[in-house]
Length: 194
Image (tube, rainbow, N blue to C red; front, side, top):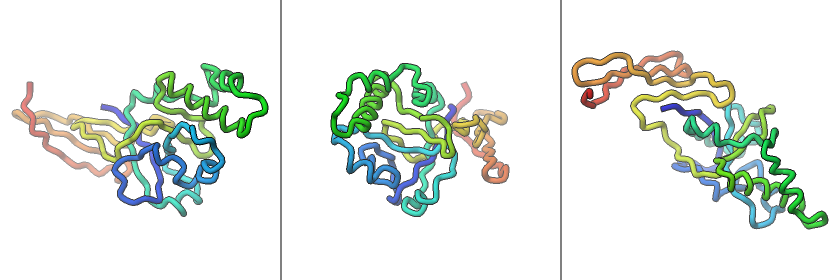
């Protein structure tokens, strides 16, 4: 199976799940959350490369590596391109002189993204490439015996568990992790060959 590795930072230690229900409790949007209407569509923030801003690591010192299913990339809406014109739709549905109009437009856009089956969105790749996801995400390595992990932004292979060879009734895998100086670890998988 294939995954993308993405990164979430939190002031909380030992999280097992990144839960959008806690939206706004971290660094970036705390002050914004206080100004927002209560109907905000919750999401969690993830970096696609492990290069957070200094203010994030000062307040949210706990890094979590998340393995996003590879197929989800097609379910991430590119908001900077806005191919379905969600901003235009939301702008047309929001009263011209309402309180917090920009927040209401943004929330309407997020609702449209979610209602149209997307798992989240990206607003393009600036200095800090990021994804915002609506779903809870488990903090755990893939459980698959054979998997590959890629960088979300440039498709660079980060981790590669591939079948090396077979012997008898067992499969042998080699794990190669470029982030660990190409350390090779052999793992025996106890499963009968077909």
